[in-house]
Amino acid sequence: MNFFLGADPVKPQTPSPNNDLAPTCLLLDFYGGWYSRLCEQDPARAVDVVVKPYGWMGTYRCSAATGAWFCGAESWHRLGWERLPG
Image 1 (tube, rainbow, N blue to C red):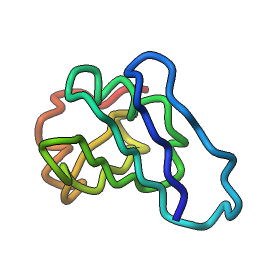
Image 2: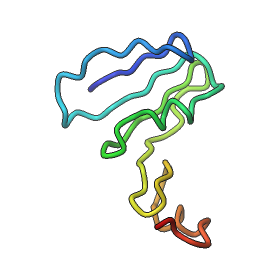
Image 3: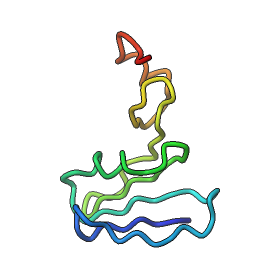
Image 4: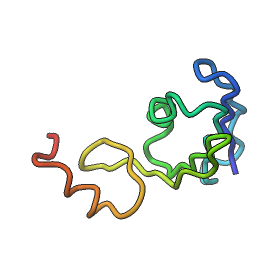
C-alpha cells in the first residue's frame, strides 16, 4: 500500500510509490483542505482518506463522468449532477 503523508497541509511528504497497482492511502494530520489534497491524487486510482484525529473518511474514486471525487456508488453520485460535464 502506498501512503501519502501530510504532516503539513500545504507541503506533504510523499514517498515514491513502489507499486503502481497498490491501493493508495492519503493520511493527513489536519481536516482542513482534505478534499483539495485528494484532488491532487491520481484520478485512475481509488484513495483511502484518513484524517487524524477523525479517522477513516472512506474510499474515494474520481468519476469519469463528472470529474469529481466521490465515496460510494457512482449511480448515487451522478444523481447530484443536473448536467454532466462535456
